[in-house]
Length: 120
Image 1: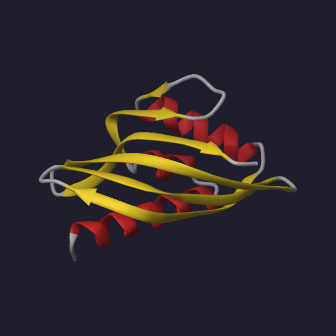
Image 2 (image 1 turned 135 degrees about the vertical axis):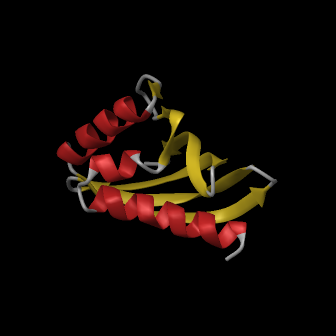
């Protein structure tokens, strides 16, 4: 599997973990020193903070998350992905875009920097 296909699969697995309401599994997709930069919220640094953030979002009604990459630029041990996100928060539909910096972590790819914003 090439890097782009691997990253597409990893992004889908992150969305699956969120949709399964499993914040611990979602956080496992991030490097130990990852940074999550959600809109209108403080920086979340490290897996524990990221797990707590995703649990709060799940508890608030986040579901039906779909991440659709439109570009993945891969280098030797880093990759940058941009794409479109959709989901729901309770009754509200979410539409937005994201940028993710992936980093090779041993033989695995993990999210290292994750930022997004919503259009709605």
